[in-house]
Structures are given as structure tokens and as C-alpha cells.
Amino acid sequence: MKFETIVAPTITELFEQQIQKAILSGKLAIGEKLPTEQELADSMNVSKSIVHIGIKNLERQGFVRIVPRHGIYVANYPEEGNIDTLLALLSVDDGTLDQTNITSLLVARQGVEGIQIIRMAENHTEEEMAQLRKYLEELKAEAYAKPKPDPDAVAEALFKFHRWITRSNNNTVTPMILNAFHDVIVVYWAQWARRVEPKLLFATEEKLLEYIDQGKGQDAYDLLADTMKTYLGEHATEHIMK
Image 1 (cartoon, rainbow, N blue to C red):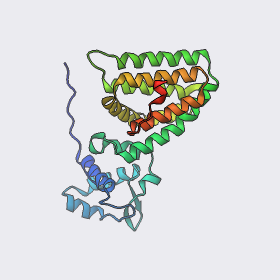
Image 2: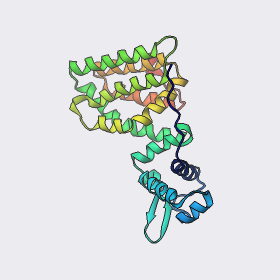
Image 3: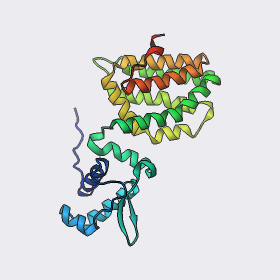
């Protein structure tokens, strides 16, 4: 077996992570003014150039804003952040999403994918359904893999299945939106696959495909919403048992 090379984080990355954690923990509040770059460098025993690069990266990620001639401030990242902010959240604390971020992500995903699920149920071609069944079979292979399923592989199969739903009716935008969230979505699906029996995840998607194929858009949408509630710890599996 060939192992991957271990790459240690750079000093700049360590600096960014420390500031990120201080912001996300509330130790640095939104709107709070940070020390100057020189003061940060002296306090953290790093060079000013490291701090300067790190601050620029944090600004790009949406965690701080630089006001010329006034200083550096903690940005209102929940409102003004971007995809870089979201991806940066995954690198904090080994990629573990807290409950607030998971809930927010699921709501956003439901908004992006939910309408497409209804549209696909109302209007789909045989070619679209054939491809969706192909992705379902790939998910089944991963969910039933021996000696045990790989959560990361299950997550990737889930992602491809749902991305195809967003591609239905020749929609070229929603798949790109989903792709932008790929790293985030796959992380929480892999977490889910470690908590829940992968065969149950397959059964959920099998039911979803059935609803779409039968033109039951609202039932498909409700199942999507229910699986999200299930992930958040609520009991909502009645659709799977029908």
C-alpha cells in the first residue's frame, strides 16, 4: 500500500486558522477591530509579511474586512461571506461542521434542489430517468460494498445522484451551484454515512427515484425535506416505510 505524503500546514495557514477559530468561537466579535498587522506579528511571533498575506486571505474568505486608513475588522461573515468562506469553515476543527452550519447548508440545498425535484417529476425524459437509475445503481454498489461500505465513496455516489436531478430539464445552472458546494455536501454526507446504515441511505434514494418516476413531485420534495430532518436528529422516516 502506498501512503500519501504528509504535508504540514504553513505558518500562514496556521495564522489564518487561529484567527478563523477566534472569530467562529466568538472570541473576536463581528465588527470588532483587530490589532494592527505589526501588533499581530509581534504578539504571535511571526513576520509581518506572514500576517499581511494571512489577512489578505482572510479578507478573500470573507472573515475580515480591511478599511483603508482605519484598520482591520471582523466581517459579518454569515451575511457577507462567499463560497470561500463556506469552504474555509471545513478546514477548521478537521472539517467538522457545527449544527448551525449544517442546518443552514441543508436549508440552502433544499432551496436549490427542491424545485428541480418537482420539475423532474412533472417533466422528465426516459434518457434522464435511465441516467438517474444508473447513478442509483452506483450508490447501491457502494452502500452494499464488502467487507463494509466506504463512507466517502457513498457520499460521492449520493452527490452524483442528486447532481443529476438538478441537471434535469436541461438546467445548466443548478448543477454548477451544487458543484460549488461539493466539498461541503460530501463532508456532511460522509458524516451521515458513518452514523446511519448506508443501506438505509440507498433505500431513501430508491424511494425518491420512484416518486420522481411516478410524477409525484410533492412526495419527492417532502421526502427530501424529511431526510434532512432525519439527519438533524428528528424522526421523519415514514416515506421510506410506505
